[in-house]
Amino acid sequence: MFKVIKKADIVLFIILIVLGLGLSWLSIAGSVTGQKAVVTVSGKTYGSYDLSRNQSVTIKHNGHTNKFSIKDGYVQMTYSDCKNQICVKKGRINETNQSIVCLPNKIVITIEGGDDKYDAISN
Image 1 (cartoon, rainbow, N blue to C red):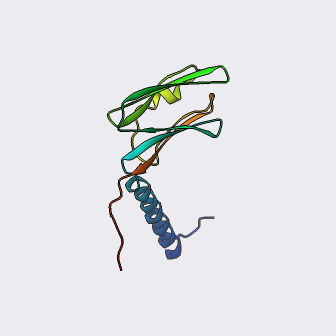
Image 2: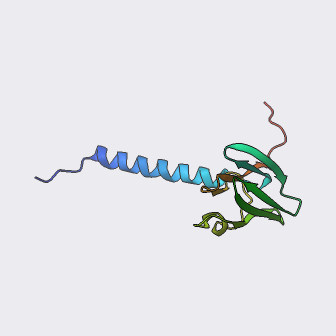
């Protein structure tokens, strides 16, 4: 009726917890401040924008309009004509591995490039 927990079960549980925490830390620690925002529309590259240059961009595609701005090294979707507004509510991003997605309008903004911690690797 009742199962007895074995030592192997406890060890497996601890290993899985440590592995999960380690992967979470790597995903967080792997992000660095990005250099550019790459925009794709319907899976095709629309443009690449330098995060060091303040600017606003309007994207018109298939009867839809989205606007994003780059200011002080951050990119933010400022307007979308989609219903759910998740992309606008996402806020500002500036680190690699971050993105803003407007699924209804098929627009993705991804942060790429970053400051390398090392200039060279030597043996």
